[in-house]
Amino acid sequence: MKAAVAVIFRDDNSRIKLLYIKRATNPHDPWSGHIAFPGGTYQKSDGDLFHTTIREVKEELCIDLEEDAVFIRKLELVRTIIKSFEIHPFLFKLRKNGSINICIPNDEVDEIYWIPIDELKIGLCRRFIKRINDVWTVYCYRWRNIKIWGATYRITRELIQNPWLFK
Image (tube, rainbow, N blue to C red; front, side, top):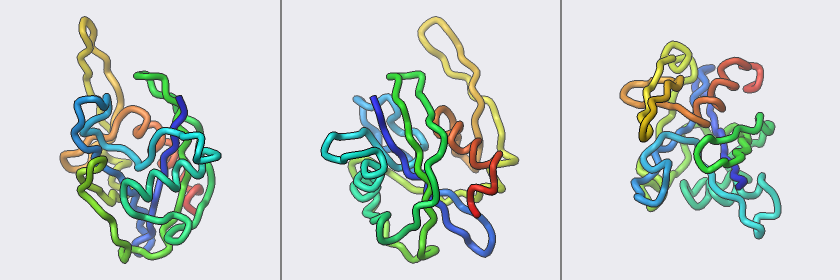
């Protein structure tokens, strides 16, 4: 399956902050309650994955990326281990720093966080995940009481390793 996410950032006085969401609790969602970038599954009516991102961000956060942000570039494809999703991340810069209305909480999103990327650089950690008869060790970023792991970690790592992407 294919999905697309928006990696949205703003520049607060030369300090890059990334927008993360906390997914709403849903017993049918394997990523329920996780920290993620806004986005979702491709639908044929979208036409392409870029427009999946536009639609999903509008549905989840009431942000119109075509009006409120500038598209910067497509980032590297990321695959999930669970459910074998192909996640296509698209990088956007907000036009209006801090003056945008976001409609949360809702059925899909409980909270949002604007996390300074420089604070994530110092928050590298490991997380242990217990599966039926196995324990996996995965890397994550920690910010306050939040852990960013999995596909969201891998997208964030690309941004941290390539700061030129924000220029």
